[in-house]
Length: 217
Image (cartoon, rainbow, N blue to C red; front, side, top):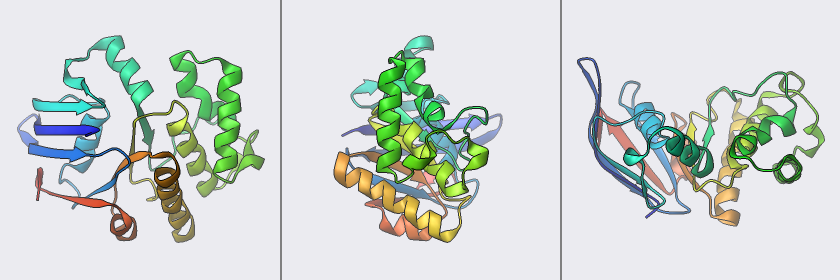
């Protein structure tokens, strides 16, 4: 099992956001987390991404109990083992596509030439090799999101977390992004946990986890 979440609780002040969430994720599985706004989906994703810590419970990713990690050890684990895809791309405007994609690898200390070669291969795989030297402002929304996907993959993470990845795309680009996720799973065994309101993407997933009022139902 790639991910094990056991009895996670999380509160902010007097508001109980997660109320005993447990779930497992197998390697090469695509899971969609769905539910109304305020159900706790994004908080759960942030805990899986080690960006937040649970008040109670445990999370294990790729054999590592992440709630025991601190400081640099936690940052290093996050950078190496987890890729992130956000709704609004979060690309740095002053960098071109290859440079944006390579940033997580630079933090990890991978040589620049090796990173740029891998970034170029990822762009080619994602069908936008002609955008290597383009900055975000010179790309469409769909192209920017593919750059963000490549950035999430640059360190060969065990797990990719996506928060409303197609929420800012038109229907055609959203469908193409969804196809990319399944292509990556089928060809490379990539694992995805996706928070989404997109019913089409949820329906395509291997499994849907539905959350209501801080619980998995």
